Image 1 (cartoon, rainbow, N blue to C red):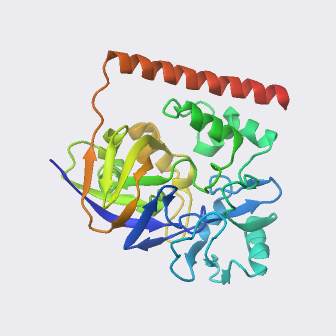
Image 2: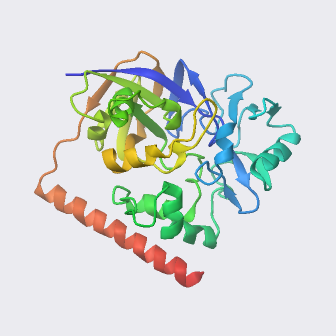
Length: 329
């Protein structure tokens, strides 16, 4: 059996900005406590901005003024400080922060706190933006792909996830891209480098980085999909491998542009690295905690047939959404 332990823990106060390493995280039902309670609103486009399409945001980092209280969450975001590429620091309640973000990006931007659960105004996309999410040209741009390269495999997503991605820039009640918790292993950072220096974890922005020693296979956490992972006192159900867009290639403080990373991901992992997970049991996680993994049993014939049917249904929903969005545009 491999030994698996927590190597690093990360919390990102503002979506698409640099975050902070911490020694301890509380994981609750909605995910990592106080993770991504702020985001930048693209006022012109009417969506929550992402480094996928607004790469300048990666030049900023954010931290909380004080450690978030237990009741921090949607509708109650703690005070945040943003460090800009030129070294300026502005608090989230300073009106100048909006002008600074707008100047950085080149169009009107507004720092926004995560609204209460019943307010979807910061999440819902316009019809044009929904259509763009399914446009092959935009998908290629989002993933850094050339015209001749195959589009990413989205069959790992559930029907619910595809519908959510079609309607919202982020799932309502969160500023995460898709799932509450993101886990990555140090082994995968080494494996992807194929003998070179391991990739810097900051390119991939996980919440939990784990050591697997010794790894029994390349990209070991990819085998945990469908299983359960106990991290400290928290229990996670692994739902998907993490699909990788162009963001890891983007420059950020102390990290240069790396276009070759797109090719590495395509050739080594079919553009997946790390795993997404839902929270089964809330709990506290600390650096050094032991991680235990219960891998899902191999599917039987009936389960394989059901999985194939689900994937076909998901693709059918995606095609239907594409047609509907095209007709209504």
